[in-house]
Amino acid sequence: MKIEFEINDSDANVLVPALQHAASQALDINTFEVLQKVIQEIQEDIQNGVSIFQQLINYLHPYTNGNPILASSKLIINLGISQNFMESSQGMHYVLSYILKVLVNTHKPGKTPSGITMTEIGKLITIDDCINLIQHHYEKS
Image 1: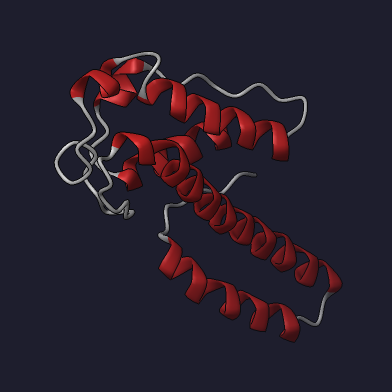
Image 2: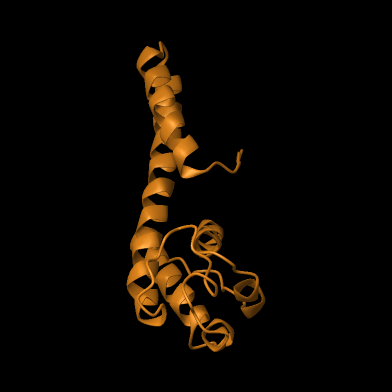
């Protein structure tokens, strides 16, 4: 069975201690193991999001005219990233695909990352959108 739901990082940081407490109170070893697996998955997702954000800062910095990169920053308006960079296969598409490839190769050796399309790139507005897109494709891989 696969259970999926969307939760932001701040809510996940609240959920993890609650799950850890529940695991510590578990009387059955199977319950404990299941809760530990859920906790581990959530923590890995949080860490992946942080890692993706740091990589976006590193790779996009030369294209932002020195503007600070925040998760809520709008790519074109706040960061000054050009429309040409957004529409080029050697621009934003290359950066996001490269980050995805490194993430998949590091955490899922032998798996092939699913491809990010130019249509998906065209819908990006903020850095958060970039993070979510990479995470979505990472989970599909």
